[in-house]
Structure formats: structure tokens, C-alpha cells
Length: 474
Image (cartoon, rainbow, N blue to C red; front, side, top):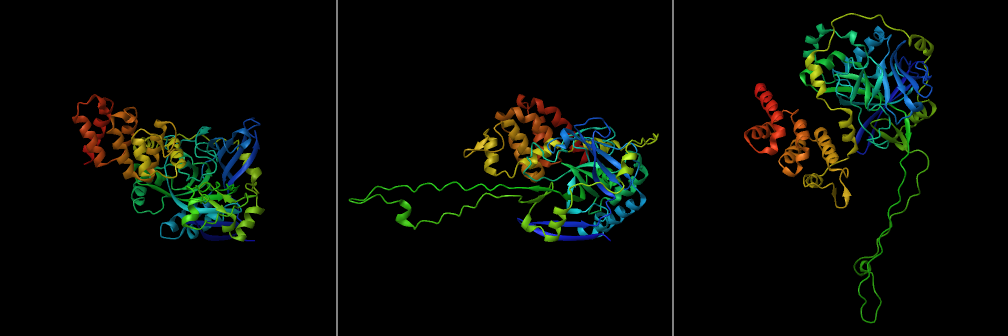
């Protein structure tokens, strides 16, 4: 029986979502459980594997019996060198198709056939070429360590909110880096619509399947690293219905002479019908992935059947072969292969996990709320804007604006720096905007250098470095 792949476009609140179902997939790429304490002797930690072909590629150690609230310990497997040539060719062909104008569902069709049965969502998204802690992703997973932001239910964002994964795990060891290919990829990334293909693994992190050398070139040239994302729809969710608050009793007016008090609403308009109270929802509302929540009524019937009949994760036919290879140690290779230093430096300046977590905690910020923060207030009209802590509110507001409205971020940051009463936040904000090339920021730092105000003392070193760099780039 051959693989059957179907795609559907559905609309959720004006947002187009692509769903792809896989039935009869070859399951030569995906994740599976390797049991509790399979390798490290920790019986409370669940070991999962991300595998490509017959090779285990990455180990994912899930503490607290695989709790979705816990960050994972991740590393590349010691015996993994590279994917099979046939799989690599499939990825390359799909990558080329995406960059000649094919749609996501057409371009990723052959890759979907390599996955286990299930329902996936496909979309394009910008990724940061780091591990989420300022380290360039290629070479950051040689040793097993806890990766912040890999919990499925992020404590900062909250388990009920959706978010976009944006950090990378390499799909190939650093030994595969070849500096000779960089001149070619440096030119190619300038015209590519899609720079990489990723498979969402856990939390804010995805495995890069195709585009490793392009990631180096994009980072060095400061080109956004846009990826085609494959994300599994695997978790049921329930949105509990909250009954509306009861309507306030109508106010009484002064009684007329010899008469009873008449409600004010009855004097001018007839009573308005009260909204019907719906019963609390029972059962699940729908299925979700990291980036989208889809109600049951919007999921096509055949896709819903696949979701209900298939397990979230099952062992592939070659599972025992994967386990046997898990303890393999690849022969140490000696080489001078290193990522170019400019890429490593620029990676340190990219957003980290904590920044992106705070971005996804805020739904929106109005100008009135920003004005209140500039006035030193943390609440508006009796409601907390972000947090009761003022400094935390300023940091989160900056994070949110920087990645949703860069122009407003610069305006807000400069307004903070112009306010002496917010002096405690000045050094942090100055460091943040010093990473942006902007003429208004340049003008501000020039004024700092020309001003003898002692309130700017902490900013002078930042200003000198920024102005010197800006002048060299002219």
C-alpha cells in the first residue's frame, strides 16, 4: 500500500492554516520513545530519539517521567555522521522545488511521505540560528545538557497559548561543515525565498533538515533565516467555557408623585434580551500543535479519523536497529572545520529563549498602555498591563515591540532614555537598541556624547561604540 497524503486549507479567525495528513508513511524520519533509563540509568527520565533513516540522530532526555512542563536534555547521538544519501536527495529536491515557486504542500510532499502517520501543519517562519542561549546552533549540541525553552508547556508562556518555534537543532554534526561551499551559498541565500526546512521537535526548538551551510551565510550577511516548518498536530486541548457575568440590576429613578419607582431602562427603551447561557463544554475542543489550535469542527473528517486512530508516537519497524546503534561512538575526526567567527559573534546578539518567551506572553500593547508604562505605572483602568513589577514590564514590552513593531520599539526605547525618572532601566535599554542600525538611535547616542549630563554617564561607553561602528558602516 502506497502512502496517501492529503492537504486542506482551513481558516481560523482570518488566518490560513495548511493541514497535511499522512497515511501509510514510511516513518523513516521522526521521533520515538526509547524507554525509561535506557542509557543513563535514570529510571525517572524518559528517553526519546529523533531518527533519520536507520540512524538515531538526536537524544532527547525528558525528566520527571517525560513531563511536558520540563525542559529537555538534548544532544546529537555520538554515532551519527550523516543521513542516508536517498533521504538527503529527497530533502534537496524538496528544497529546490520550494525555491522555484512551488507551494508548501507541493514542495514538501515527498518529505511528508517519509514521516509517520499523522496530521501535520505546514507554514513559513523566521528562525534564529542559535540554540536559544546565544550559541550558534551547529556545534552547540555535542554534549548532553538542558536546553531552555524545550518544554512543550512553557511555564512563562502558559500551556493554553500558542507560540512559534524559532530556535534550531542541527540535523547533521559539525564535521559536515565545508568552508569551500560558503562562497556559493553566500550568493544563493540572497535570492532564496526559503532558506531551510525544519521539523518541529519540542517547545521553541526544531531540527534543521536542510540548509545548514545557508544558515552560516544568512547569519553572516544578516539575512532573515526563513524556514518551511513541518509541525505535528498531536495534542488534544479543551477550552473551558466561562459563563458571562450577570447583568447589573437596573437603576431606580425617583418615583413620580403618587407612583412607584420606574427603572431607567424601561423609561426610554424596552428591556434587552439577555444572552443565552451556554452549558460548560465537555470533552475536548480540538487538537493543537505549538503554533496553532484547531477546533474539532474545522478538522476534516478523514484527518480527524487519523488523529484518533493513531498514537502520538510509535516505534518504527527498525526500532531495534536504532537502539543497537545508540551506544555507537563515531571515530574521532581531526580537522580545522570551524564556523566563521562573524557568524559566532552575530549569534551572540540574537534573541534568546527568555526574550522570545516574554514576546509570546503578550497579546497586544496599545498606545495608552505604553504611555502608562512611560509614566511609571504598571496598570491602566484597574488592570495590570503586563506585570506588577515595573522593570519586568519594561523588559517584556521592549521584547514584544522589537519583534512585532520595530519602529515602535525604537520610539518607546528612546522615550524611556529621555525620561530621567526611569534611570534604573537606561543601561539595559541602551544595550538593547545599540544592536539596531537606526538613524534616530544614532542621533540619540551622538547627543549622549555631546552632553555632560551625569545621568548619561553609564551610557557613554555604549554610545562611543555605537557611533564609531555606525560611522564606519557609512
